[in-house]
Image (tube, rainbow, N blue to C red):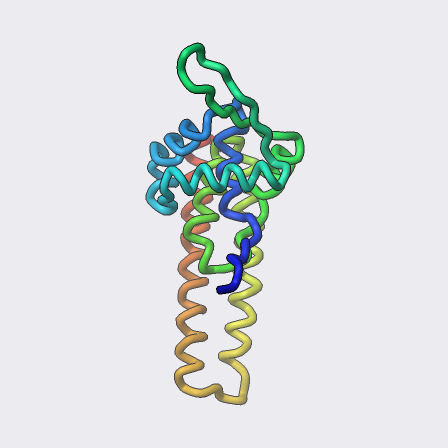
Length: 185
């Protein structure tokens, strides 16, 4: 049996957002994730997974933890952002999502935290995401317009991707308009 491969962190950076304002116990981080409807609709993880991800973030140097004594009760672990964690979260927040299959989870998490930051962060995120998607749309449109006809099923896949990208771009326009109105811009 081969060892489990650890994928690079990405969506997990969203957990850093819950620690941006103040240190918390891992249980509190998990509770915030579960009690945030926008995020809970797209990212549901078990409590033990949250704990494991927080440990992984700590191993990567984005978090530090300390033990909090509670009298007769067992001590608890408190986690807080390191400067590296804060910088990584800030950078992650405005970077466009690289892969379409991760858009549903990761972009929604970024949008949630961006709107809690300021309107400029929201606009930067949407603008950068729109640029990435527009580039992909142009590539697929070029493939469809090429004189060498692809196999019929290949064309259908490309047409599907074009439809997805066009719909997502339209949604980003709606998203920007809604967020800007909500934040009084």
